[in-house]
Image (tube, rainbow, N blue to C red; front, top):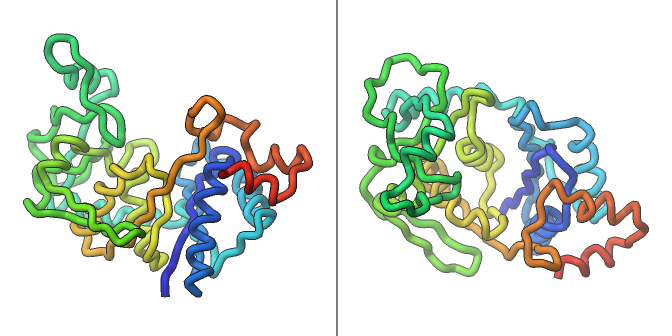
Length: 274
């Protein structure tokens, strides 16, 4: 039985892009006679609001989307995250980083005035703190994945179309770099939390936007390191505005709530996603 999921963050209103992703996952699960589960990714305590979470539930129900089992909330899973971080630290997959964004921008800049390389998390980290002495205790700093320490092998995942996407350790080092897996202000990053949560919910198929294609490689590596299953991935097109710009949470005019309040029906909103 397949299990799809939808995992919004309650840091803003759901917009057309969110609804499109949720509907694709929901329909995929129901057509296959599978499960559809909901997760609230509320680890950003400063920006997460109960109002947005309540609105998420209301908007999904209005769209005709229901879910199986209880809602998983990341804010209630810190013990699981801490255990994973401890294991990764003990196995030398992590190192502490004290660099600021300004530090990274300066040291990552290539010669002759060119632009620095950019990966899924922004400027690819130049490895400034990688070879510093590591203590037995985890310091209160950002913790980065040491891509040089991962196994020298070909990693892969399957797309919904049946294609096998493969990449190497060299690809990780060059195009993704040492991404942050635990943040000082939050305690964990999106990348590590989503991998642990997908496994906890038994997710077999992940539906997400094509903008997260490169991030999927990070998740596959973490699944390999932690001995977790790798789902099948569907990277769908992005919903854009009239100028071709990807929708963002700050664009309240494109929110499901806004369309509902303007009197649009569900069918009319669905047509806007095409």
